[in-house]
Image (cartoon, rainbow, N blue to C red; front, side):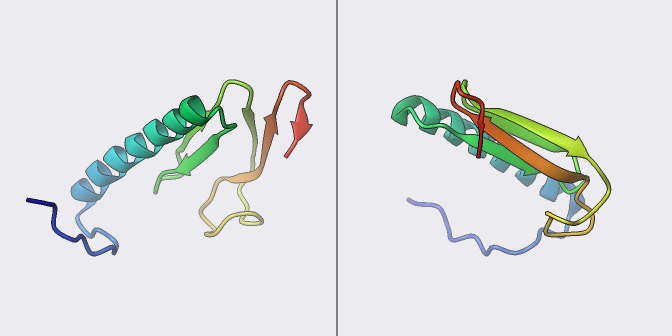
Length: 96
């Protein structure tokens, strides 16, 4: 017996929303790790929680640098606390 179809919409209950965020975040981080390991891919993943907390993953030769600012220049919502995100990959340090 398979799982039922889940309607994709905002979860109104705060506790349920936090539990779902944590589980899905961990699943995304695991998939990013597996993709980098299995396919020898350069992977960088950045996740912002509803409260603006940053979670990140980068494969061994990638690094994520952020500069903190209160602005919405590169963000979808005005609540995003980061202005610039620079991802450097490869041993040469080339910006992407």
